[in-house]
Length: 74
Image (cartoon, rainbow, N blue to C red; front, side, top):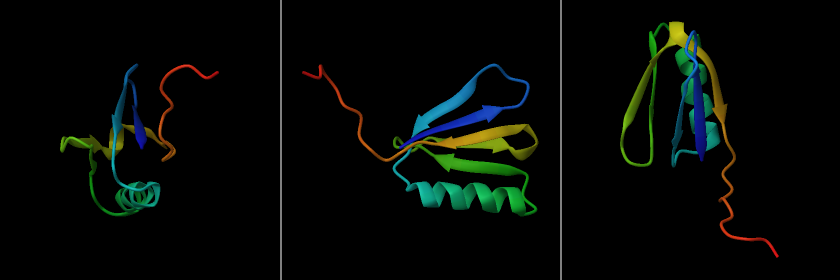
């Protein structure tokens, strides 16, 4: 699943693939925003850890779980 994270005052965004379900990602984001924590931590498919300070978090876009089609459609 594709995840895009917007960073405040930055023209670029974080974009990565995760094997976690959309519900798991939504729960992690909700817990980070409602709790007393200072950052959001997410892992991608390759094991990289992304840590985003909540003060800089603009948005989190959670993509669908469908696989991408490759090739020509006839």
